[in-house]
Length: 168
Length: 168
Image (tube, rainbow over all chains, first blue to last red; front, side, top):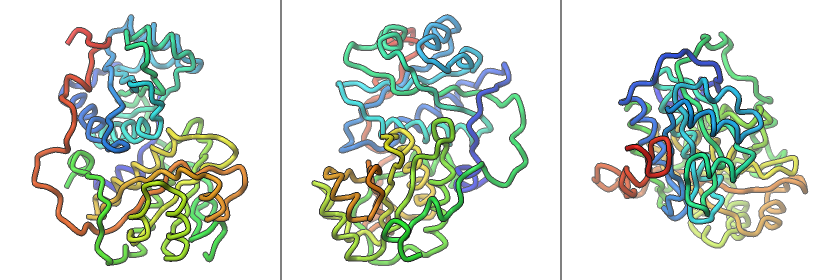
């Protein structure tokens, strides 16, 4: 599948088989995140690759909607260091990882950590770090729905030409 | 080029040829952004496709480092609506667009708009909208440097196992 179709067919997935994600796939996923650009190449993001069940459970307890996280064979926490928020750069890194995974039939979904102190302590991060998001990865328990595209608002709601509700 | 190599070879680029980006490529870029997932599928992002020179110049005046923006043949402003910040979701959408563009030899770089009121007014956006970022796109004026990968901190600075400076 080419890059464009990989990108547009990607679905966020939270139900996975127990099958582990092989080490070489994990490495490509993390490398995709590392290669994401960042503002002025400040590289604010760091990745904690979590496969230890106890750590997954402690970490998942830091989010309000993270009960599915311990069942994800692979969790990658995206930490930001240096006291910055860097959520845009974290989004770039996360999407690179999720699209690279999808190209290898590995599904994924991001998850927010609502209790930041809890998340920082669970991973032993520096005190000025934040964890805006983590991503759970795994082989999908169910095939994707056979719909041509994900549920999205109509094109004309999304795309405007030159100005809001502009000349097209 | 496969998806993984498209992702990891992507370089942020701010110098472009005057050659316009064809309409079908623009459509795929924007569709890649539209298909990016978002928190609870709230779809907070909207895209303003800017190719009018006057609008580009007015818009570029809203950022501190945006002087290169009017020379980009295509600018896509990422607006977020509904009073949310949604910078993580904007990062997901931006990265999808930039990787889809790169797969078609179109370079790109994000740019911040430091003066939000200016940016909102330049594009005629609703008053509660924000424009965390825009992306300039175009065919690269210079070939990419022949280095195997972008300048990044070493792998071990990026990737940690289970805990910060963990068990690997």
